[in-house]
Length: 335
Image (cartoon, rainbow, N blue to C red):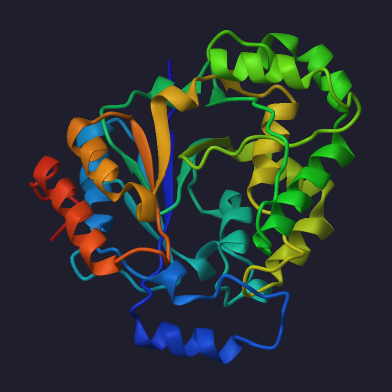
């Protein structure tokens, strides 16, 4: 019998004037290690209601939805809705790390959410269900569905975010030996579930036996076991605590990917073809395609990845129009 599965989503209202004032009070423009404090990251696409409508329509089996904010909430949200658990940062993040304006402390402490089920799926607010899903799209035999796919790190542009990817990979290399993992997990490393991953892993197995070159991070809903987060906190408390002290994303951070890597490299996952099930689409390049994918239900999951290289108001109107065409009815989560 399938155990209960919770959904967790984090959201911020970038238009909240009080939140903006508090953020600016802590922001230090001269600190080059801080980044990700731009307006683009926090701007509101006004499509959160479609996230809830999609969950109600495509995943009615979900046990509970934990909706994380710093304390503000959308005016239209019915906080008394069944299954909804409104979670403030102060409800689960240790006080010494607050306030935070970075997603990293929010994500690294998810296991502390009161009442969170052992099996849960984490969503960024730009991840959407786009077609009917089953519990087996996230967990099979009690294991998170995922894909162990090697992808050598490349840095074509100078971005401070690259340092976080490096830090996550260093974590993997400090705790796991690539050659040993490939030998012990060969059935999962060379799974037939995704031929693309199989071929890529076979080719890359010819290079550099001892250290990981990089692991692909699918920008899609991520299934976790709560005990995974607890285990990583037990083995690396200082590393995670250091990231949590940074109020904004910082070049010294690690991300939630350390949890993903821990599950993958311990073999605690069920092979799943994520490439077939979902896709991340950058708004600046794919606005028309995003609308088509929404209307055709082409993938079970999609990520609508924001960009500063886009006519925001026009893209917002088009994408929300596509959502409205397939999800026109209010959900139980709306007043």
